[in-house]
Image (cartoon, rainbow, N blue to C red):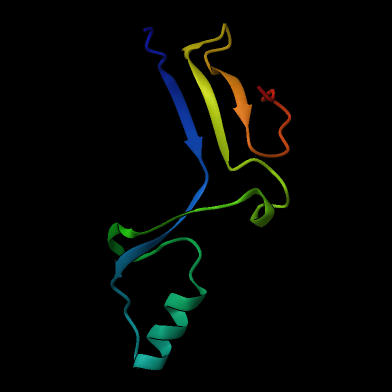
Length: 95
């Protein structure tokens, strides 16, 4: 029996933990600085909390795909060929 190899892309949610060093006069000022920082300044380390991994349904992604099956061979443009997706997609075809 033949064996087929695919690449599967999946959109997920996962918590990320960061250790952050902040210079501030008070704890409140430090908390405010970290809560308003979107550039990631002061990050000392980062880890993904793998036990918080959760798949996302297309209904939680405005109907757009959250799981795509791709052929392992790449196309001329360097990307795997999409074969199937579970939601709205501009690139994948339903099998």
